[in-house]
Length: 221
View 1 (tube, rainbow, N blue to C red):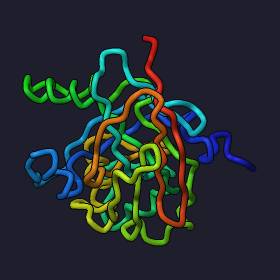
View 2 (view 1 turned 30 degrees about the horizontal axis):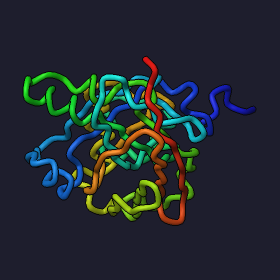
View 3 (view 1 turned 60 degrees about the horizontal axis):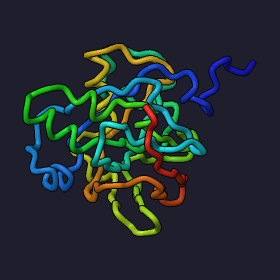
View 4 (view 1 turned 90 degrees about the vertical axis):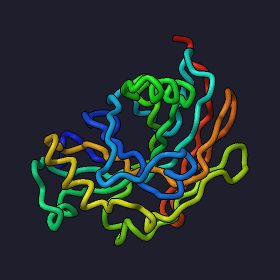
């Protein structure tokens, strides 16, 4: 019997989007940040999802919207305090994701020591590709991610460059919060993040696996 919650449409029912910051050393360097001994975590609401075919929305309060291309890991079952050695058993598949970031707002938040919610968690801040079943990616640490804006290559990186591995990340997060079926973990972005403006076209992909396109629009709210 088919599941009432198909993973192929995870963005319609998945609850939690947990994001990892500073997980590629070259991106940490370009942001003039420090490499930390534990992952930096932040959350996006489920209304951040933007499946292909819908636009990327620039919030009305943002003047400097940045793209960050990331590998997303989809959980296939509920887990708490998951051992690192068993973590991949909880993975149902993957998606290519964008962590759209209001960089001007984030910089203000950092200066004031405030959370990044306004910069990271706005509506349509998490564009996603089609679901990729786990079987199609034998090794998630051997992928090349890329992103183009209006046909110009902006970001490319290899998941082998992650500071914290996927099993470590899953185990770490699950010790803080219970993970549920359909939850999405964004695993960080490689270097090359940069601005997009209204009417730009973003194209991104995982070599040999999946690609996606989005148009940038300004939110009316």
